[in-house]
Image 1 (tube, rainbow over the protein chains, first blue to last red):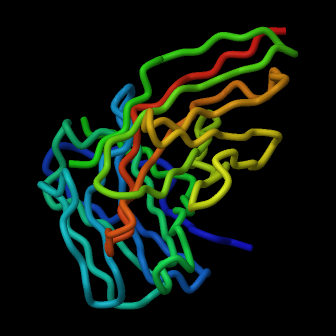
Image 2: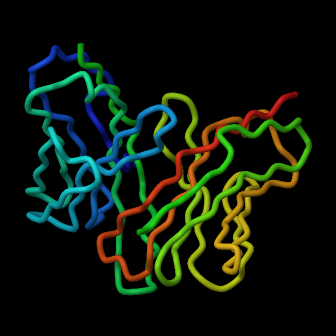
Length: 117
Length: 115
């Protein structure tokens, strides 16, 4: 019962470096999300996907990119790391079926803690 | 615009006492409402949800939540708190007309249960 798996769990980057946070889910969920969590700020949505090949921006997309080539995988790319991207990143997935069939609760990974110095 | 407010940054209760963590929301139409719990250095875990019907929803670990449409609230409750309930709790909302599945989260409330 893996659920949502994120790698790496921890990473330190230098300013200007690039990296990809990996996310995979084995629940055959159609929807996937990336959130960032900053202390006292709750969770902010970065990007989301409603299915393979379809992605869209959330509240705070600047500095990030995503792709969704398969149902299972939803990687998040940081192109030019900045100190403002120091945060904990959470990937989540959900299943939205026919109206009323599912409330679409999110299932979260364990998080990736990123520090940019 | 949809929003969620958790008015208390921290709630302190003694073990064995009842606890309440407050949540109010703003959304067009009828909402789906959720509570999540986060333990230190862990992901968010789903506790319970309100879809429709009975206003009192029961969830995991003895938690329940009461939906009040007139007050647009969805407070989390537990009759008898445990030290192990100490964690960060998030309320979240989604409008029923939303086809993106996006949840809007509150800022979180830290629950501290003291022995």
